[in-house]
Image (tube, rainbow, N blue to C red; front, top):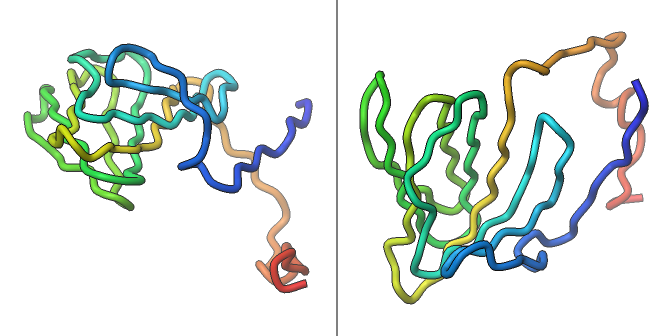
Length: 139
């Protein structure tokens, strides 16, 4: 397996976003199939009703509030995504997103991933101290 570069972003809230539709901006932080990580800004708007056949949507709140409305075989509901909160919407669940405020913007991180290509390759066990012998912050 070819090694890919590490991606670092100092401040995702300052990442450049492009208008996707009126009231919805998106900036792709990482796109390497089968996973995409993007930052969204929805000032007084949202994302219309949709669903995915194979993709999990993993939402992480950054700023403001985001209402995630969902309908699926296991139930319907509304989850208010706040800064630091997390929500997973699995494949087959219809959902829509809305910023309840017409004034305050909402920022959220969305990781979209499929389950089909996931793997886990274990390595030899070592303690965190042995695995990470230095800290770039403390020297």
